[in-house]
Image 1 (tube, rainbow, N blue to C red):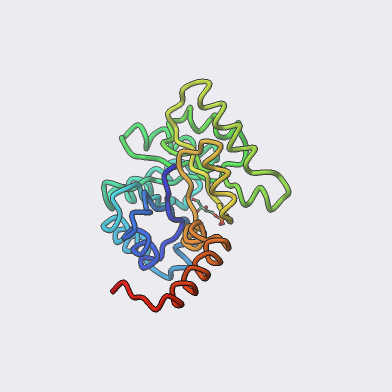
Image 2 (cartoon, rainbow, N blue to C red):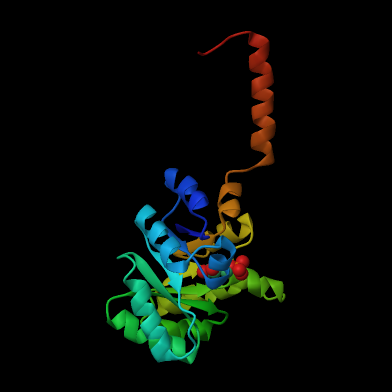
Length: 217
Ligand code: E4P
């Protein structure tokens, strides 16, 4: 499973990228707002740092305006993925922008039918929002499983990008269900390395080592 980082914070992306953990980056208007940066400038910086796809989201609501914004965003760098919302206008924009050779991430997906129609419109990535479904007591992982089945049934090439990931369990569940990509905030990616038995075991090893009086260096 590929790891995308869901942030527009350059320092956080760079730290994970140094460890080879970053296959791509996703941003959205809220993350740009949080960063306090200009969208074109910060997106360019991210693209310079990362080789993989960097999602930058349109904010227009009409298809023609989304297409114009998408074309402008796509000019930032070769690895830009234009992100469009899963609305009828977004699907029209997806069809045109992907037809022009751009990667397109169709976002705000909450149903299997939405994922099906996004694949038909030529989406490179579909972004089902796990956490936001969990927020309303619907198991977001069922949606990942359904989309996996549908895409495999018909050999759709659209990649399933599990989004709105809030916990380490979301990451492992998405991987078990065969999501192609998961995008997660940096703190969730870092937590994947944690286990209380690792901490406990290490503390015991270090305490015993001290008793030997030895040094390796
Ligand atoms: C994905 O592309 C979105 O930016 C993101 O995963 C949304 O996550 P949230 O529901 O935690 O805001």
